[in-house]
Image (cartoon, rainbow, N blue to C red; front, side, top):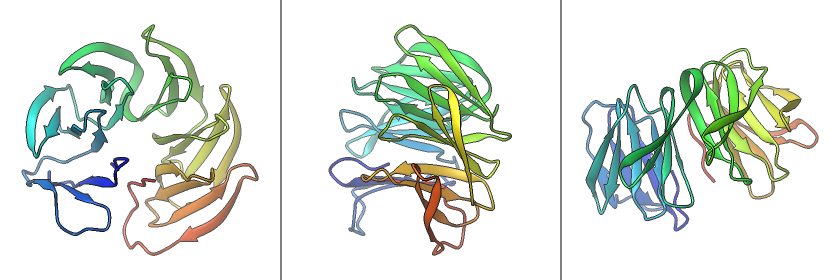
Length: 239
């Protein structure tokens, strides 16, 4: 997770979280290993770092844990909202948290919620192990649309500058959606697509279990570059 001021947080499968400034080796603070995997990270509006873990979300500020929120199942994904609240995705549920309390639950997925993003129009998009993407109206607390087409888990979501939604899946592809319709299915990775990020010029980056990062021209539907420097899976990207 990257903050606007260049502070980056990274977590690992053993429970360690490092917070440092981009380009500097020294840690600002560190959560020590406790063998509890860190699945997701998000910076909240007030500078609090939310850490999604096994059965909980830890909230850290000033280098210490200030609150622990209990969940049913592992916290697969987090999404910070402009008002300082945030969303967590776990087994079948999306929870909306404000001031340390769950103020709303969104139900509809039939398996783990693996990805959450807030769209420019204020709606929420979620991707799930149930192979679907759902679009939610958070104010009304209801699902507006369900997008189907992937043949395996939907692990990553991103919104393009033109409003289309990109969804990355374990079926090795990612799809481009406009107004609930799949406009294109782009292939090229040889293993699961695990993460997506949109670059400032609108180029889409995808990371995969095949150890590569690919850059895509989403208007032409073509891969314009492939980075092969990693030797293990690429699980996260940040801009």
